[in-house]
Length: 130
Image: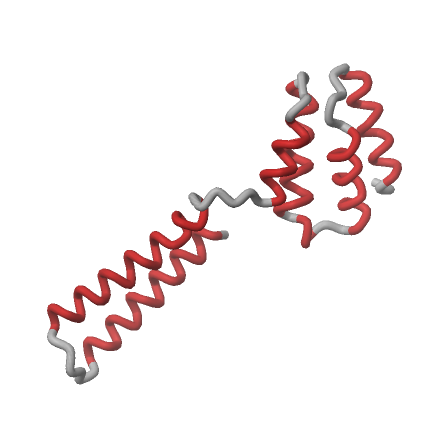
């Protein structure tokens, strides 16, 4: 999603530059190129700076907290997927799906046995009416 926004911003910038080239303006051509290059660099670099700022998103916190005590690759995979669905796609989930993923996030950390993992998944499915 972020890549698409950057691409659209760049396309808008290029289209406006092409339009400005056909209009009479007081800027010399060399100055216009420098301004264009500066703006394009700024647009493309802004998301990189934001992602490198060290801020943890709720998704990151979910993954870090839920995987801290995970000894099973099966539960780790389920937890990572649940965090992804709940925090990255939460707005598109039905309430029963939100209940299911929240149940997994709250009850699956620390569960190591495959049978116990299946039991937690089954109970969360019932609670979410899935």
